[in-house]
Length: 470
View 1 (cartoon, rainbow, N blue to C red):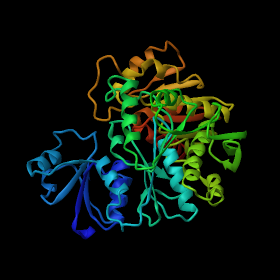
View 2: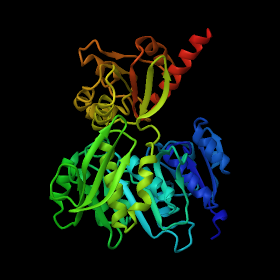
View 3: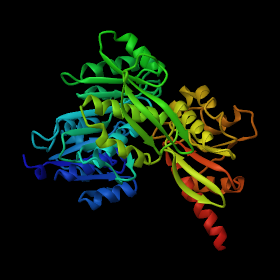
View 4: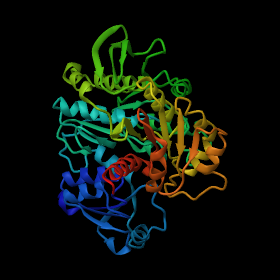
């Protein structure tokens, strides 16, 4: 079938993942349309590529010959989803489209030969983005779909003509079991999505065992042996030949040695067993980014790439959008934004910030989902030890219903600490109340997967308006 004759309709096309898939299909020549509740930079991007985007969900948008795509977040009573069912259209999950893409949807038979998937509780966006970036810069013309914007490339998805397809694989709803990877990189494992993994870590282990079993013939599994959750995965699956990397565990296949840290980066050598295979320089901070580079190098080395071709591009990678990303600076106050929304991610980000900052460190935290805040309440409380002041704004529900007694005000009250402050209301309202609390020299980090990302811009605007006498 000619690509142009197949129609795809995305419900909530403005999401970062959905817009990436839409962009990919548009580049292949498919007819793409979709809807979202509001206009955004992502809806504008896919519109510019030729998608028809509707603001607002309406059953009349759905036509009988469409393939309709939705994520787990879209409720069954969504009018477009209801209309699709009435027309007998099976609504595909976004993971189904990613699977089809990984298997060569719309491509010539020879184009995608190697599927490299990055997963795990933390770091999958950065590792998939870094891998895509260095392959792109080295001229391998990869295809990729990742969960964040790669700043230097200004995109999170591309349909290339090289043999590699790189993707971020989401374990949050169990859909990771659908894919057939040639190389599966599992960065780490911790319980996070307590709404789905109701039996905790045991359920997570079962899901990843199925993912491993579904890999392509001859497919490889690369794991971070320093992670306690990964150690349990290895112990539970003695029949699987894991390829390991790490900084602390002995007997790993890939290790980083001779590490040197500077204010915003590091230098180190990577060894494959006893042989030094490459020296890497990063301009993104923190030990966790050494792990991320290790994961990518291990995957590419297992694919037989000339590492010298990709080596220079690790240094020019500035990180993924919303990963310790500087968003504003005024009056000696530096504001960074980070997507961290799990206790371990938050602690890692703040510990890295403390390493490169001797002044006051202020965190502005937006809990993401009531179920996550409830399930990981005590772990969240332990995540902010590196900060001098913590400000907590209202929970970003992500379409969840509220849970009685689980909210940001109660979370702050549980600290019994005057340096922990609750500020409610919209992000504009929060910014107005936060600005007077800041002082020159502060490093401020907004943390969360919701609209807390807007606060940096709102603070800068309020500051500029005040200076201008507006």
